[in-house]
Image (cartoon, rainbow, N blue to C red):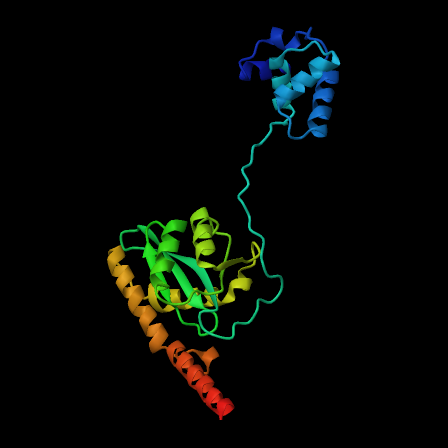
Length: 267
């Protein structure tokens, strides 16, 4: 395409196209700005302008900012989320009794009108018993700690609770609750849900046997249905990993066995 036709299509004056620029060559300034930005990656254009002035470059701030942006050197301020390291590397310690090691997570679902809600799921790693299923539209660290206080009222607390890196589990409110209760929050490694396998398996059963079967019109109805499923799960649903016993039957059987062993040892 000729220059005449190109200028006509772009509605651009041919005189401007052929006009020679009289601006000074800024290649040296651009290269120096790039060198400073690469040497100090957390410096913005203002600090680079100050460094240039100290080196003797007679350049104003607006020009430095323009070349800084044209070179794609914008400083991106990223706020990193606080990460907790995993306390256990490799296989986690095997619990030997009830209320020793718990696992905790969240499950998401929606009501019939499309409103989303969340369910706090808690399971005992030894007996597979679920002490708590709490549904709500809003789940903060404070709400999680209050729900745990209700279920632990008058009973012993677990030694540790395995959780992921959700914002609720990293909150200061839950950290304060764990400190006051003497509970260790065991954070899995980021991106490794297999390290919290007990709660992941439980969440799958909750979704398959309860959430996918029922459609709730209100949060109160959802809480009632979920609580009924939790009671059925604990007392009536056989568990293959427990020898086809329910979690409550498994606890009772192990307690009877331990009592019999104590009688034999004392005799």
